[in-house]
Length: 66
Image 1 (spheres, helix red, strand yellow):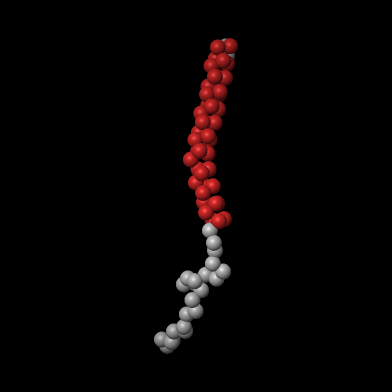
Image 2 (tube, rainbow, N blue to C red):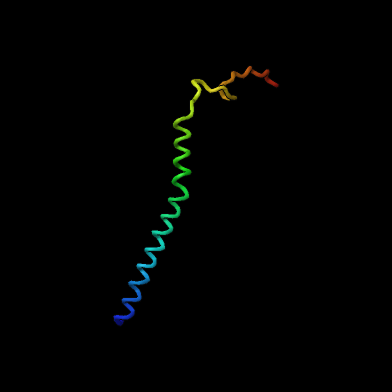
């Protein structure tokens, strides 16, 4: 192994690290606002005391077919 190949390999490692840092930065710029808006929307929207959906409605008993 020569000194030149060691220097080239160190340059490639630095380049790989810079690509990883750039990728993480771009992903953070894309997903951080979306996650922040989701958290803010769920934190600041009023929630009803009791749900008024299908799960809250009482169902009448169906007659058996037997």
